[in-house]
Image (tube, rainbow, N blue to C red):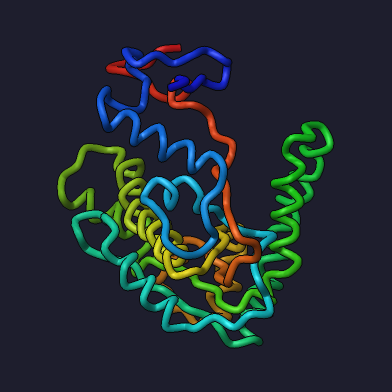
Amino acid sequence: MAKPKDRNGRRITVNDPFYPYEQGDFLEQGEAAVRRALYSAPATGELTGVELLTTTRSVRRRLDFERPVDIRLVYAALSDALQAPNGSNEQPWQWIVVTEADKRRRLAECYRRSARPYLEAMADQAAEEPERAGVWRASAYLAEHLHRVPVLVVPCLSLSPDDLEDRFRKLGLPAPVDHVAHSVYYGSVWPAMWSLMLALRLRGLACAVTALHLARAQEAAEILHLPDHVTQAGLLAVAYPKGKSFRPAPRKSVREVVHHDSWHS
């Protein structure tokens, strides 16, 4: 069986510490799973664990704006996502599921105003780095058509980062506490957001995850009638996907990002 290569073309051997599988039967099973994922995986239907993890995308240009979404599927996916890890199991998340057309339109307008500077900067970057043009086009497409997405989900936290900083100070953590507080804060909702993406995929749905509207979070909060103590963490645009399959995205190899025991340049 041919052994895989890293991004630099170097062949990875079985005794290489970065080789992703153990020797024996599991080695062949693991390589077979990767080979399947490297080509494509069904957009809907039964998926292996490897296929689910490696081909679940933030879908921007392949969302079906015309096909209605059964909201029961979204709630079922949210029920699964609530099993995600979170700080001290306090489960500070709250989720706003938006289907009303006028609210989706107003949120989309807020998003476009907030995203415009970012998208303009992306366009300039894409002109200098053509390989980034696809991400820019997809991001611009989502911004232009966000109001047409049938379901928008806004994950929130029922406290502010400052609240968590105060809590850690009272617990006696050494100063400064902002780093640990902010890590625990957003780490208590983003794993659930990823779990939601996976759970939606298993139910035949797709979504794009973004946070660009947070530059105008107060405007969005007014649209959603959020209490002052609630903080938004992002936005997921949910719809059925177009097309029959998804592929893994280009990513750096394990060798390029993993450091064994200590940092190695």
